[in-house]
Length: 243
Ligand SMILES: C[S@@+](CC[C@H](N)C(=O)[O-])C[C@H]1O[C@@H](n2cnc3c(N)ncnc32)[C@H](O)[C@@H]1O
Image (cartoon, rainbow, N blue to C red; front, side):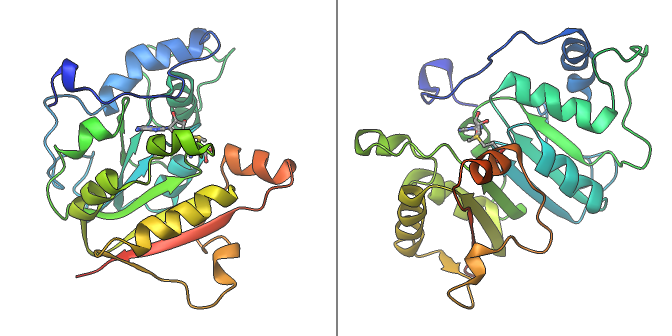
């Protein structure tokens, strides 16, 4: 682990409004059951409730809709979600347990019926997790609607950057996929430039149009709904980790 002094600077929000009773209980009592901590070992046999052949990572899962949806549709795959924003982590826990404000709080929390134990949560900056993930461990990485930091003077804060791409390339297996969505013009051009300049990735687009349409297994996110409601059109970019 990085020492505290080496902790990278994080510019987003860690918490906004007060977290109410049910979500606080979920954070205190259920999160530790599925949380990645300093003792977690990255072993596909033991990391999740059952052994998995494939593992995906979602970076900045926000309110968790996409992570919860993908994990439900792919019960044999393990999903790691990294998110700094505490309210978002609490929302993910609500989605996967069904416990909402006003629900009677059980003595022991468990997943909703029909869900497998295939989600693990890292509740901090994903850059602190990167160095613990073995080379080629991941099949897919999702970075959906990263904060765009559109001003030029904030460009160094953009998540898609050479340092993070180097780590992403290392932890993705050859042939693995990096999926990025954005609704911001500046971030779209920035991302294409960063990936074009990186020797380990190939853009998988087949025609000029396919980046305008969500992939077949897409799960809509809160940020995406907000972008569309405000008149911005998201793009969906996929890059393959070259062998
Ligand atoms: C604009 S929001 C998008 C959230 C979600 N993906 C969606 O589409 O609704 C970006 C999210 O990324 C998270 N984030 C930004 N940098 C991060 C990092 N280094 N590690 C973990 N999460 C991060 C933020 O806390 C925020 O929730």
